[in-house]
Image 1 (cartoon, rainbow, N blue to C red):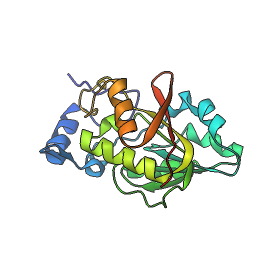
Image 2 (image 1 turned 90 degrees about the vertical axis):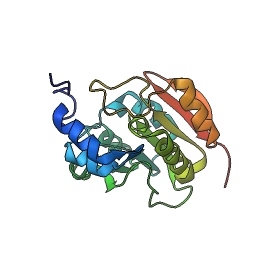
Image 3 (image 1 turned 30 degrees about the horizontal axis):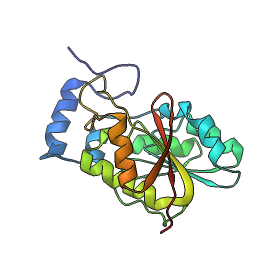
Image 4 (image 1 turned 180 degrees about the vertical axis):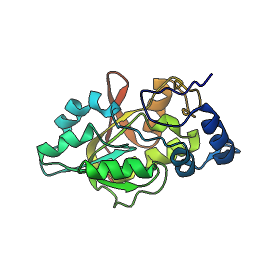
Length: 208
């Protein structure tokens, strides 16, 4: 039976997912761009909706917001009315196209690649339901980049899933909330509080 859900992301079925994984996930290393584009993983970008009101407490009009793994940014676009410059990145070409149509300054870039932004560039960074899609090594790389581009004494809202996904194929790093908090702290981000349903608010307190 095809376990791939039909109502969330319009990705391909289980047979295609498994075939693409066999080509793109080798010896613990994943080619995220090839995999997610091959299976047509076009995320609507809905998970961030739970955290928008919290994020608005930590950003002012005219400031810059980066959402890592923004998908189509169908929820994130609502932040534009607050006179915030919103940036996004995603590996799926169609998602990037959709996000641009939604008014987001979106680029095609993996969460674990070097971000094409200066150090201390953004006033807030979000990353919801993304980090768990990476390997442990790549999740750490992503957090390092989030730390680098976030301004000192500013906040990031990170919300990795801590359970397997419905297909059983997408979440490569399934860890406890405590494990994720330790990873964030190891990379220089200070834990602030848990934001339901699964958000972790952290702060960059050191200056580089």
